[in-house]
Length: 401
Ligand SMILES: [Zn+2]
Image (cartoon, rainbow, N blue to C red; front, side):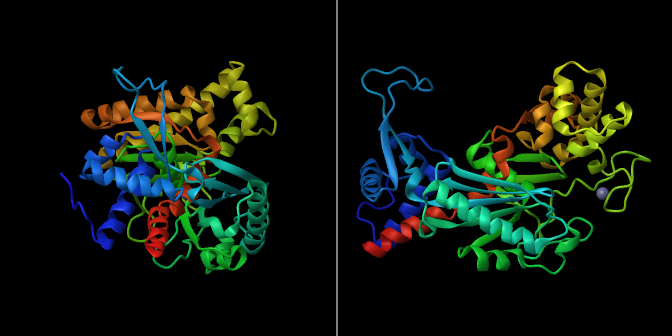
Protein backbone atom coordinates (compact mmCIF):
# COMPACT_ATOMS: atom_id res chain seq x y z
CA UNK A 1 0.00 0.00 0.00
CA UNK A 2 1.25 3.48 -0.72
CA UNK A 3 0.59 6.80 0.97
CA UNK A 4 0.56 8.70 -2.27
CA UNK A 5 1.85 7.74 -5.71
CA UNK A 6 2.28 11.33 -6.98
CA UNK A 7 3.04 13.11 -3.74
CA UNK A 8 2.69 16.83 -3.06
CA UNK A 9 5.90 18.68 -2.04
CA UNK A 10 5.01 18.48 1.66
CA UNK A 11 4.32 14.72 1.47
CA UNK A 12 7.56 14.24 -0.44
CA UNK A 13 9.45 16.18 2.26
CA UNK A 14 7.81 14.13 5.02
CA UNK A 15 8.69 10.88 3.19
CA UNK A 16 12.33 11.96 2.82
CA UNK A 17 12.55 12.77 6.54
CA UNK A 18 10.98 9.44 7.53
CA UNK A 19 13.23 7.50 5.16
CA UNK A 20 16.39 9.24 6.47
CA UNK A 21 15.29 8.73 10.08
CA UNK A 22 14.62 5.03 9.48
CA UNK A 23 18.08 4.61 7.95
CA UNK A 24 19.75 6.49 10.83
CA UNK A 25 18.20 4.12 13.40
CA UNK A 26 18.48 0.91 11.36
CA UNK A 27 21.21 0.98 8.71
CA UNK A 28 21.88 -1.69 6.07
CA UNK A 29 18.26 -2.54 5.27
CA UNK A 30 16.70 -3.85 2.09
CA UNK A 31 14.30 -1.72 0.04
CA UNK A 32 11.46 -4.18 0.68
CA UNK A 33 12.04 -3.96 4.44
CA UNK A 34 12.06 -0.14 4.31
CA UNK A 35 8.87 -0.10 2.24
CA UNK A 36 7.11 -2.35 4.75
CA UNK A 37 8.17 -0.40 7.83
CA UNK A 38 7.34 3.00 6.29
CA UNK A 39 4.12 1.86 4.58
CA UNK A 40 5.35 3.01 1.16
CA UNK A 41 4.99 1.27 -2.21
CA UNK A 42 7.94 -0.27 -4.00
CA UNK A 43 7.83 2.46 -6.66
CA UNK A 44 7.80 5.27 -4.08
CA UNK A 45 10.72 3.71 -2.15
CA UNK A 46 12.76 3.30 -5.35
CA UNK A 47 12.10 6.89 -6.46
CA UNK A 48 12.91 8.29 -2.99
CA UNK A 49 16.13 6.30 -2.66
CA UNK A 50 17.34 7.15 -6.14
CA UNK A 51 16.82 10.84 -5.43
CA UNK A 52 18.60 10.61 -2.05
CA UNK A 53 21.46 8.63 -3.58
CA UNK A 54 21.88 11.20 -6.34
CA UNK A 55 22.12 13.91 -3.64
CA UNK A 56 24.89 11.91 -1.92
CA UNK A 57 22.77 11.17 1.16
CA UNK A 58 22.29 7.39 0.91
CA UNK A 59 24.30 4.45 -0.38
CA UNK A 60 22.86 1.28 -1.92
CA UNK A 61 25.19 -1.71 -1.91
CA UNK A 62 25.03 -5.44 -2.48
CA UNK A 63 26.81 -7.53 0.18
CA UNK A 64 27.52 -11.00 -1.16
CA UNK A 65 28.81 -12.29 2.17
CA UNK A 66 25.79 -11.42 4.29
CA UNK A 67 25.38 -14.21 6.87
CA UNK A 68 22.32 -12.80 8.61
CA UNK A 69 19.91 -13.45 5.76
CA UNK A 70 18.70 -16.92 4.81
CA UNK A 71 20.37 -18.26 1.69
CA UNK A 72 18.33 -17.35 -1.37
CA UNK A 73 18.57 -18.05 -5.04
CA UNK A 74 20.11 -15.24 -7.05
CA UNK A 75 21.89 -12.14 -5.86
CA UNK A 76 21.41 -10.80 -2.32
CA UNK A 77 19.16 -7.73 -2.09
CA UNK A 78 20.54 -4.20 -2.16
CA UNK A 79 21.34 -2.89 1.32
CA UNK A 80 20.56 0.75 1.92
CA UNK A 81 22.43 2.96 4.43
CA UNK A 82 22.99 6.66 4.97
CA UNK A 83 26.11 8.01 3.28
CA UNK A 84 28.39 8.57 6.30
CA UNK A 85 29.80 11.81 4.85
CA UNK A 86 26.36 13.41 4.31
CA UNK A 87 26.57 15.12 7.73
CA UNK A 88 28.98 15.46 10.65
CA UNK A 89 28.65 16.41 14.30
CA UNK A 90 31.07 17.27 17.08
CA UNK A 91 30.74 15.28 20.29
CA UNK A 92 32.21 16.79 23.45
CA UNK A 93 32.55 14.95 26.72
CA UNK A 94 33.25 16.96 29.89
CA UNK A 95 34.20 14.46 32.58
CA UNK A 96 35.17 15.50 36.13
CA UNK A 97 38.84 15.10 35.15
CA UNK A 98 39.01 15.35 31.37
CA UNK A 99 37.66 16.96 28.20
CA UNK A 100 37.31 15.04 24.94
CA UNK A 101 36.25 16.37 21.53
CA UNK A 102 35.51 14.07 18.59
CA UNK A 103 34.30 14.62 15.04
CA UNK A 104 31.77 11.94 14.06
CA UNK A 105 30.09 11.11 10.79
CA UNK A 106 26.50 10.02 10.18
CA UNK A 107 27.48 6.35 10.43
CA UNK A 108 28.77 6.78 14.01
CA UNK A 109 32.40 6.65 13.00
CA UNK A 110 34.88 8.84 14.89
CA UNK A 111 37.10 10.60 12.35
CA UNK A 112 39.24 12.48 14.84
CA UNK A 113 39.47 12.47 18.61
CA UNK A 114 41.25 14.95 20.92
CA UNK A 115 41.59 14.45 24.68
CA UNK A 116 43.13 16.40 27.56
CA UNK A 117 43.00 16.05 31.35
CA UNK A 118 41.25 18.95 33.05
CA UNK A 119 39.84 20.12 36.37
CA UNK A 120 36.31 20.47 34.98
CA UNK A 121 34.47 20.79 38.31
CA UNK A 122 35.97 24.07 39.51
CA UNK A 123 36.76 26.01 36.36
CA UNK A 124 34.14 26.28 33.59
CA UNK A 125 35.85 29.20 31.76
CA UNK A 126 39.11 27.40 31.04
CA UNK A 127 37.13 24.21 30.28
CA UNK A 128 35.26 26.05 27.47
CA UNK A 129 38.55 27.45 26.12
CA UNK A 130 40.07 23.97 26.15
CA UNK A 131 36.99 22.57 24.37
CA UNK A 132 37.41 25.22 21.68
CA UNK A 133 41.10 24.32 21.12
CA UNK A 134 40.41 20.57 21.06
CA UNK A 135 37.47 20.96 18.64
CA UNK A 136 39.46 23.15 16.24
CA UNK A 137 42.25 20.54 16.27
CA UNK A 138 39.80 17.62 15.80
CA UNK A 139 38.07 19.31 12.82
CA UNK A 140 41.48 19.95 11.20
CA UNK A 141 42.55 16.32 11.82
CA UNK A 142 39.31 15.03 10.28
CA UNK A 143 39.51 17.45 7.33
CA UNK A 144 35.89 18.51 8.01
CA UNK A 145 34.73 22.09 7.44
CA UNK A 146 32.67 23.79 10.15
CA UNK A 147 29.95 24.45 7.52
CA UNK A 148 29.43 20.66 7.11
CA UNK A 149 28.80 20.15 10.83
CA UNK A 150 25.18 19.94 12.03
CA UNK A 151 26.23 21.11 15.51
CA UNK A 152 27.97 20.06 18.69
CA UNK A 153 26.54 17.96 21.49
CA UNK A 154 28.09 18.13 24.94
CA UNK A 155 27.90 15.47 27.61
CA UNK A 156 28.34 17.06 31.04
CA UNK A 157 28.83 15.25 34.36
CA UNK A 158 25.83 16.92 36.03
CA UNK A 159 22.08 17.10 35.47
CA UNK A 160 21.19 19.64 32.79
CA UNK A 161 17.87 21.50 32.70
CA UNK A 162 16.64 20.92 29.16
CA UNK A 163 14.35 23.98 29.27
CA UNK A 164 16.85 26.61 30.48
CA UNK A 165 20.20 25.06 29.51
CA UNK A 166 21.50 25.74 33.02
CA UNK A 167 23.32 23.09 35.03
CA UNK A 168 22.03 21.78 38.36
CA UNK A 169 25.49 22.29 39.83
CA UNK A 170 24.91 22.17 43.61
CA UNK A 171 27.48 19.86 45.19
CA UNK A 172 28.25 18.18 41.85
CA UNK A 173 30.06 20.82 39.75
CA UNK A 174 30.93 23.43 42.39
CA UNK A 175 32.20 26.14 40.00
CA UNK A 176 29.32 25.92 37.52
CA UNK A 177 26.47 27.65 39.35
CA UNK A 178 24.81 30.27 37.14
CA UNK A 179 26.82 29.30 34.05
CA UNK A 180 25.03 28.69 30.72
CA UNK A 181 27.42 26.28 28.97
CA UNK A 182 25.55 26.14 25.62
CA UNK A 183 25.71 29.92 25.20
CA UNK A 184 29.39 30.05 26.22
CA UNK A 185 30.31 27.25 23.80
CA UNK A 186 28.25 28.58 20.87
CA UNK A 187 30.26 31.81 21.15
CA UNK A 188 33.53 29.88 21.01
CA UNK A 189 32.68 27.10 18.52
CA UNK A 190 30.51 29.04 16.04
CA UNK A 191 27.92 26.26 15.77
CA UNK A 192 24.71 25.19 17.50
CA UNK A 193 25.44 23.51 20.84
CA UNK A 194 23.21 21.26 22.88
CA UNK A 195 24.11 20.17 26.43
CA UNK A 196 23.05 16.83 27.87
CA UNK A 197 23.93 14.93 30.99
CA UNK A 198 26.90 12.69 30.14
CA UNK A 199 25.13 9.47 31.16
CA UNK A 200 22.21 10.39 28.89
CA UNK A 201 24.76 10.98 26.13
CA UNK A 202 26.28 7.53 26.78
CA UNK A 203 22.81 5.99 26.60
CA UNK A 204 22.13 7.70 23.26
CA UNK A 205 25.51 6.59 21.92
CA UNK A 206 24.90 2.92 22.78
CA UNK A 207 21.31 3.24 21.55
CA UNK A 208 22.15 4.70 18.14
CA UNK A 209 25.57 3.16 17.43
CA UNK A 210 26.28 0.39 19.99
CA UNK A 211 24.84 -2.65 21.75
CA UNK A 212 21.49 -0.89 22.32
CA UNK A 213 20.73 -0.40 18.62
CA UNK A 214 17.08 -1.21 17.93
CA UNK A 215 16.26 -1.65 21.66
CA UNK A 216 13.35 0.53 22.75
CA UNK A 217 13.64 0.34 26.57
CA UNK A 218 17.10 0.38 28.11
CA UNK A 219 19.14 1.64 31.03
CA UNK A 220 22.74 2.80 30.63
CA UNK A 221 24.78 2.93 33.82
CA UNK A 222 27.97 4.94 33.58
CA UNK A 223 30.61 4.08 36.19
CA UNK A 224 33.65 6.34 35.87
CA UNK A 225 34.82 9.32 37.95
CA UNK A 226 31.14 9.61 38.98
CA UNK A 227 28.04 7.45 38.65
CA UNK A 228 25.40 8.38 36.09
CA UNK A 229 22.38 6.73 34.57
CA UNK A 230 20.78 7.37 31.18
CA UNK A 231 17.35 6.12 30.18
CA UNK A 232 15.94 5.29 26.77
CA UNK A 233 12.20 4.76 27.10
CA UNK A 234 10.03 3.80 24.15
CA UNK A 235 12.95 4.56 21.83
CA UNK A 236 13.53 8.11 23.14
CA UNK A 237 15.99 9.61 25.59
CA UNK A 238 14.20 10.40 28.88
CA UNK A 239 15.46 13.22 31.13
CA UNK A 240 12.41 13.90 33.30
CA UNK A 241 10.73 17.27 33.80
CA UNK A 242 13.94 19.17 34.72
CA UNK A 243 16.62 16.83 33.39
CA UNK A 244 17.40 15.14 36.70
CA UNK A 245 15.96 11.67 35.93
CA UNK A 246 18.41 8.86 36.56
CA UNK A 247 20.54 10.52 39.25
CA UNK A 248 21.29 7.26 41.06
CA UNK A 249 24.84 8.22 42.06
CA UNK A 250 23.58 9.97 45.16
CA UNK A 251 21.11 7.41 46.39
CA UNK A 252 22.18 5.82 49.70
CA UNK A 253 23.29 2.22 49.19
CA UNK A 254 25.74 1.50 52.05
CA UNK A 255 24.47 2.03 55.59
CA UNK A 256 27.09 3.93 57.66
CA UNK A 257 29.22 4.20 54.52
CA UNK A 258 31.68 6.97 53.68
CA UNK A 259 30.63 10.63 53.57
CA UNK A 260 29.91 11.55 49.93
CA UNK A 261 30.92 14.81 48.24
CA UNK A 262 27.20 15.69 48.16
CA UNK A 263 27.18 15.68 51.98
CA UNK A 264 25.15 12.51 52.48
CA UNK A 265 26.54 9.19 53.65
CA UNK A 266 26.98 5.92 51.77
CA UNK A 267 25.83 7.10 48.31
CA UNK A 268 26.42 4.69 45.41
CA UNK A 269 29.17 7.10 44.28
CA UNK A 270 31.18 6.37 47.44
CA UNK A 271 31.69 2.76 46.27
CA UNK A 272 31.09 2.57 42.52
CA UNK A 273 33.53 5.00 40.89
CA UNK A 274 36.97 4.17 39.53
CA UNK A 275 38.71 6.10 42.32
CA UNK A 276 36.47 4.61 45.03
CA UNK A 277 37.61 1.13 43.98
CA UNK A 278 41.28 2.06 43.61
CA UNK A 279 41.31 4.00 46.94
CA UNK A 280 39.73 1.03 48.73
CA UNK A 281 42.37 -1.36 47.44
CA UNK A 282 45.18 1.18 47.85
CA UNK A 283 44.34 1.57 51.57
CA UNK A 284 44.71 -2.16 52.18
CA UNK A 285 48.01 -2.28 50.26
CA UNK A 286 49.39 0.95 51.72
CA UNK A 287 50.02 2.49 48.30
CA UNK A 288 48.44 5.04 45.95
CA UNK A 289 46.69 3.22 43.12
CA UNK A 290 45.08 4.02 39.80
CA UNK A 291 42.19 2.06 38.34
CA UNK A 292 44.50 0.81 35.56
CA UNK A 293 46.61 -0.75 38.35
CA UNK A 294 43.47 -2.41 39.82
CA UNK A 295 42.67 -3.90 36.39
CA UNK A 296 46.22 -5.24 36.11
CA UNK A 297 45.96 -6.88 39.56
CA UNK A 298 42.58 -8.33 38.60
CA UNK A 299 44.11 -9.87 35.52
CA UNK A 300 46.94 -11.31 37.64
CA UNK A 301 44.33 -13.05 39.83
CA UNK A 302 44.82 -10.83 42.92
CA UNK A 303 42.20 -11.75 45.55
CA UNK A 304 41.94 -8.23 47.00
CA UNK A 305 41.34 -6.66 43.60
CA UNK A 306 38.70 -9.27 42.80
CA UNK A 307 37.02 -8.68 46.16
CA UNK A 308 36.91 -4.89 45.61
CA UNK A 309 35.34 -5.24 42.15
CA UNK A 310 32.85 -7.98 43.18
CA UNK A 311 31.62 -5.93 46.18
CA UNK A 312 31.23 -2.90 43.93
CA UNK A 313 29.22 -4.99 41.46
CA UNK A 314 26.96 -6.20 44.29
CA UNK A 315 26.31 -2.61 45.42
CA UNK A 316 25.57 -1.54 41.84
CA UNK A 317 23.23 -4.53 41.45
CA UNK A 318 21.32 -3.57 44.61
CA UNK A 319 20.60 -0.12 43.21
CA UNK A 320 19.87 -1.38 39.67
CA UNK A 321 17.38 -3.98 40.96
CA UNK A 322 14.87 -1.29 41.91
CA UNK A 323 15.28 0.43 38.57
CA UNK A 324 14.70 -2.88 36.76
CA UNK A 325 11.39 -3.21 38.65
CA UNK A 326 10.45 0.37 37.87
CA UNK A 327 11.33 0.48 34.15
CA UNK A 328 11.19 -3.19 33.05
CA UNK A 329 14.04 -2.66 30.55
CA UNK A 330 15.21 -5.09 27.89
CA UNK A 331 18.83 -4.12 28.40
CA UNK A 332 20.99 -2.81 31.25
CA UNK A 333 24.23 -1.56 29.74
CA UNK A 334 27.25 -1.07 31.98
CA UNK A 335 29.58 1.60 30.63
CA UNK A 336 32.34 3.89 31.86
CA UNK A 337 35.85 3.06 33.12
CA UNK A 338 34.66 0.36 35.55
CA UNK A 339 33.12 -1.67 32.71
CA UNK A 340 36.67 -2.68 31.75
CA UNK A 341 36.57 -5.06 34.76
CA UNK A 342 34.25 -7.19 32.58
CA UNK A 343 32.49 -10.27 33.96
CA UNK A 344 34.04 -9.84 37.45
CA UNK A 345 31.86 -6.73 37.74
CA UNK A 346 28.88 -7.90 35.64
CA UNK A 347 28.27 -11.26 37.38
CA UNK A 348 27.52 -9.81 40.86
CA UNK A 349 25.30 -7.17 39.20
CA UNK A 350 23.28 -9.94 37.48
CA UNK A 351 23.10 -11.94 40.73
CA UNK A 352 21.77 -8.96 42.69
CA UNK A 353 19.23 -8.15 39.96
CA UNK A 354 18.09 -11.80 39.89
CA UNK A 355 17.75 -11.91 43.66
CA UNK A 356 16.11 -8.53 44.22
CA UNK A 357 13.98 -7.71 41.17
CA UNK A 358 10.56 -9.13 40.36
CA UNK A 359 11.33 -12.41 38.51
CA UNK A 360 9.55 -11.40 35.29
CA UNK A 361 11.45 -8.09 35.15
CA UNK A 362 14.80 -9.71 36.08
CA UNK A 363 14.34 -12.36 33.40
CA UNK A 364 13.63 -9.74 30.70
CA UNK A 365 16.64 -7.56 31.58
CA UNK A 366 19.95 -8.58 30.05
CA UNK A 367 22.94 -7.01 31.84
CA UNK A 368 25.71 -6.41 29.30
CA UNK A 369 28.84 -4.36 28.87
CA UNK A 370 28.65 -1.37 26.49
CA UNK A 371 30.38 -1.84 23.15
CA UNK A 372 31.51 1.75 22.56
CA UNK A 373 33.90 1.82 25.54
CA UNK A 374 35.42 5.20 26.32
CA UNK A 375 33.79 6.67 23.21
CA UNK A 376 30.16 6.12 24.28
CA UNK A 377 29.81 9.64 25.70
CA UNK A 378 31.29 11.57 22.76
CA UNK A 379 29.40 9.44 20.24
CA UNK A 380 26.20 9.98 22.20
CA UNK A 381 26.82 13.72 22.44
CA UNK A 382 27.32 13.79 18.66
CA UNK A 383 24.21 11.62 18.25
CA UNK A 384 22.14 14.37 19.92
CA UNK A 385 22.97 16.53 16.88
CA UNK A 386 23.01 13.72 14.30
CA UNK A 387 19.38 12.87 15.11
CA UNK A 388 18.57 16.33 13.65
CA UNK A 389 20.38 15.47 10.40
CA UNK A 390 17.36 13.85 8.61
CA UNK A 391 15.38 17.13 8.90
CA UNK A 392 18.40 19.18 7.84
CA UNK A 393 19.20 16.98 4.82
CA UNK A 394 15.58 16.79 3.66
CA UNK A 395 15.36 20.58 4.05
CA UNK A 396 18.36 20.95 1.73
CA UNK A 397 16.52 18.93 -0.97
CA UNK A 398 13.29 20.90 -0.48
CA UNK A 399 15.21 24.11 -1.17
CA UNK A 400 16.57 22.71 -4.43
CA UNK A 401 13.19 21.37 -5.64
ZN1 LIG B 1 26.25 11.60 47.32
